[in-house]
Image (cartoon, rainbow, N blue to C red; front, side):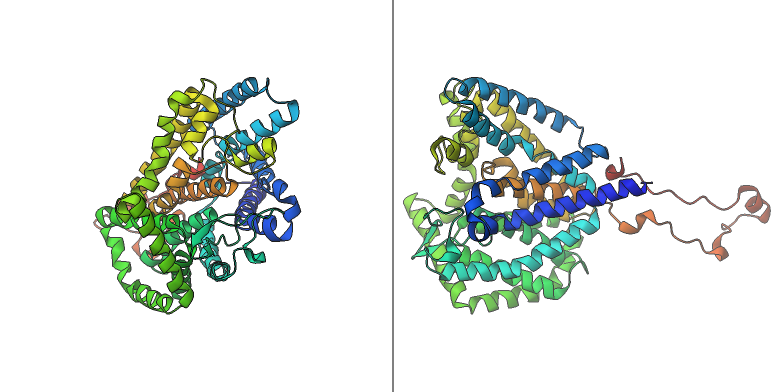
Amino acid sequence: MQSATEQRSFIQIKRLIWLYFFLLIFEGTFRKWILPQYSDVLLVIRDPVVLAIYALALKEKVFPRNGYVLSLGIIAILSWLVALIVLEPYLSLKPLILVTGFGFRSNFLHLPLIFVIGRVLDREDIKKLGWWILVGLIPMCVLLAVQFNAAPDSFINRTAGLGESQQITAGGGKIRPPGTFSFVSGVILTAALAAAYLLYGALTRGVYRNWLLFGGGFALVVTIGVSGSRSVLLAVLVVLSSLLAIIVFRPSAMTQFGRNLLIVVVVLLLALRLPVFKEGVQILSDRFTDVAEAEEGSIAGGLLVRLFSGFTEGFMLLNRAPIGGYGLGIGTNGGAKFLTGRTLFLLTEGEWGRIVLESGPILGLAYLAWRTMLTIKLGLLSFRKLKQGEILPIMLYCAGFIALLNGQFGQPTNLGFAVFICGLCLAAANAKTSPESDVPAPVDPRRRRMARRSRYAEGLHGSPATRLPSDDFVDR
C-alpha cells in the first residue's frame, strides 16, 4: 500500500505527463502565433518537463531500471563523447555543446519516458486521454479546414518563428494544413492516435458515448480529406490494419462493431456534402496519381515505397559514413540552425540515414538496433495482450510503431508523439484486464457452507479463504 507522500508523488508525475501532452499539442501554437520571437527556445519546451518527471520517478523508484534503459544510456554516452572528439577541431565550445547537446536530447533524452508512462498511468488515465484526444480532434479539424481554405501567406498559415517561409504545399494553390502544430507531421500522428481510440470505442461497449464516436469519426474523415498529405491516410490505414489481427486472434470483439456501422455510413455521407472535403479529396487524389505516374507504378506501390525507403537509405549510406560519424546533432534541423542560422538538412532527410551519418556505422547501427528491438518488444507484448482479450494495446501500437522505428526524432513533434503513443501502448498493456478484479466479491452468508460437507467438517475447516488478487507488472 502506498503512503500519502507516495500517492502525492504519483499524482504529480501524472500531472506532468498531462502537461507533456498539452505542450505536445500546443507547442506549435506558441511558436507560430503567441510567442514567435521565442520560437527557438520553445522548440525544447518539453525538456524541463521530462527532467522533472525523471526526478520524481527516481525519487519514487519507478524510473525504469531495465536492460533497454541501461543499454540506451551506454550508447548515448559513447555517442556524445565520440561526437565531441570528432567536432572539437572544427567548432568552438559554444556551438560544440549546443549542436551535440541538441543531438543528445533528440536521440536519447525522451525515450525512457516510454517506460515511465507505462508504469505510472492506469486504465482510467488511458481512457481519459483518449476522450480528450477525440474531443480535441473536433476543433482541430475545423482549424485544418480553415487553414486549407486560407491563402498560403495568411496569418493562420504562418510557420514557426519570425521568418517569411511558408508551409509545405499540397497542390492547387493549397498548403498542407498543420493545425496547432508547426508542421503537418503533428497532424499525421494525431490522426493515427485518434483512429486508434475511435476503433477502441467502436469495439468496446460503453467506453465512449455515441456522440463522441460520431463527432470524432466525422472530424477524422475531414482531417484526412483536407490534410493534403498521403502520410495522414497511410497512418490511419496502418491503424485500421489492426482489425485484421483482431479478427484472427479475438473475433468476438468484432461483434460490437456492427452496431456502430451506421455511424460510419452517416459520417461518410455528411463529409461528402462538405465542399472543402470534396476539394481536399480531389487534391489528395491528384497527388497520389502524380506520384504514381512519376514513379511508373501503382498508388499502393507508391505508399509501400514511401514506407520502406527510409530504412533502405540508412544501409546504403553505411560505406559513406566515417567510423565516428560526422557528429551527433549535425543532421538535425536544430543543429543546422546553430551552425548556419537556417533550418535545413545538412546530411539527409531520412532518419536512418541521419543516424548512420551522425554517429557512424558502429554506434549508429547500435542505436537503430535498440529502436528496432523496442519496437519488436512492444509489438509482441501487444499481440500477447490481444490474445488475452485486450484490444487497445495493439491499436496504439499500430498508431505509434512507425514513429518509434523510423520517425524523425530531430523534429520535436515527431519525437514527442513517438514517445507518448508508445508509452500509452505500454501502459494499456500493463493495465489490469478487469478494473474490478482487485475487489473481492462479497460472500453470501447463506452460501458459506459448501455442498456435501457435514456440519462437523464445516466447523473443522471453516469457510474458504478469499482469493487474493493477482500481482501485476505495474505494481512491481
